[in-house]
Amino acid sequence: MSTRFEEFYRRSIEDREGFWAEQAQLIEWHRPPQQICDYGHPPFARWFAGGLTNLCHNAVDRHLAARAGQNALIAISTETGAEKAYSYQELHAEVNRMAAVLKALGVQKGDRVQIYMPMIAEAAFAMLACARLGAIHSVVFGGFASGALASRIDDAQPKVIVSADAGSRGGRVVAYKPLLDEALQLSAHRPAAVLIVDRGLAPAPMRAGRDHDWASLRALHMDAQVPCEWVDATHPSYTLYTSGTTGRPKGVQRDTGGYTVALAASMKHIFAAQPGQTFFCTSDIGWVVGHSYIIYAPLINGMATVLYEGLPVRPDAGTWWGIVEKYRVTHMFSAPTAIRVLKKHDAAHLHRHDLSSLKALWLAGEPLDEPTAAWISDAIGKPIIDNYWQTETGWPILTLCNGVEKQDTRFGSPGKAVYGYNVKLIDDATGQELTQANQKGVLAIEGPLPPGCMQTVWRDDERFVNTYWKSIPGRLIYSTFDWGIRDEDGYYFILGRTDDVINVAGHRLGTREIEESIAAHAQIAEVAVVGVADSLKGQVALAFAVVRDAALTDDAPARQALEAEIMKLVDSRLGAVARPSRVLFVAALPKTRSGKLLRRALQAVAEGRDPGDLSTMEDPAALAQVQQQL
Ligand code: ATP
Ligand code: MG
Image (tube, rainbow, N blue to C red; front, side, top):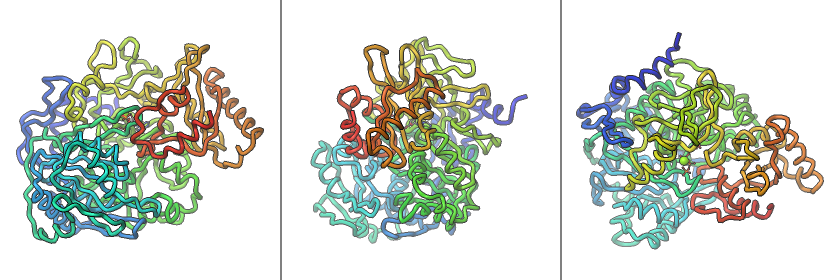
């Protein structure tokens, strides 16, 4: 007998149109869709074509009737001490003011608006105002250097750029305006206007005729009423870049109707979330998790959402958990990398707070190793739910759908294939589907991708088709470029990126498997394994480890002893074939600004090659240190 979830999943694949027609009822349409899914030109899917709707209407206006006075957006900065809760009515008023200002600056339906902002309420107003006008926003992670910003300006060609004088990180003011001015020197494109939110943190010299002050313009539009622009479901809502972990970032283009429906459905079936509850996602609006689960999904679902500027450990490791207590947060969403930061601190900081409102903690973005999952699960006493997805998909591909049916967590697995995603494991050499349990293959998705996923690469249909749909011989199928395995119960395990598979003397090993076994050593805080070319074995594994107590590796004999212990651990867990040729100890690992391990840069440096595009790298010192160790 099949379970409730299995039936739900099967229907989403076998009766695609019926299933998604039903989900489409979760949002409001100005005119209902004329067609549920137009897949006449694969791999381009047009969801809910002919339907007219508006993302801002569904996120804000729609809730005014029933919850005007309820909290909608709670903006908290532990950097500046600012804290303000906006009700739906207040959010509506602010979004109307922002929309009126953007309109006055010339923004119309289809125009791009670049948003280069810290985590402040005005960033949310700007995103929602764009959606209101049918303009396409393109958020660039705040604090990206001018070069990365300039290339994104040239790609998006925005009519207006919305920015701020500065952000703040760990008590240090990061001036944005000079970076933006520099980027505008570097870029070929010239926006018609720049709108600056002046927080009074850093000097922001304004260029007459181009730069405008938000507070002054807002004051002219206090009572503005800007109607929502009804757009076709397939009208682009935004573009957003991938993290750049594997190379040059890709500009993902997302639609309007499909995305709104997908997010509404995810709140119901994945998060089991109710209107009136409070969602706290600790990501940044510069990433897809921030777009979907700080801004749009909680608001579409009539919830309050927390927008947080600050670190998880400042003033201390209890800061997030104090927010959970104060605002009775029900759903929390974070990333393994943030939990690893917390893990270096005393769990007592978490225990100080009343977390009784919290139902569960969702984590996404990179592999969730078992020690990290176990630590946070112990520390907060709540279910920890891993979920696997990509900028490209906009919402989870693999997780537990507890809103459909209670499912058990299996440590090390993000869960099962989510409804709507026809997930397959493919043998990358033959293109054959792997149907047996426990076979390793490329995680792929049979088209059409479900609603909410990318429509194309911005202004580059060819790159969309060639990058994602042509990598597997002999068939048109979407590749995630992740490598995985499925157990007999349908739980998937991600083994690493497809280009992270190491081939040692003919044995195919996932870097993740080796990392997991090394992370089991009590002294290891974090580890990265890469495959390095070897004339004898083809490839060998090389490990870079961060130890919990740096003093432990201060002298050569201690380092060697720890290295030997780690090798023995890998031998016993995976076998000698997986044993790294060396374990090098470093103070930090190179990461993207979104906190992902830059394994390809490690590998390139280890092989003495050029590390390639590093525009999204967080801390160049980490890579320099690795270079020294080699
Ligand atoms: P780029 O595509 O530019 O190289 P990126 O893949 O890191 O960068 P994102 O879209 O931010 O860009 O990240 C998606 C990827 O992150 C996934 O393909 C997967 O490799 C990894 N990932 C996300 N969530 C999980 C998870 N829960 N478990 C394991 N890996 C995950
Ligand atoms: Mg990717």
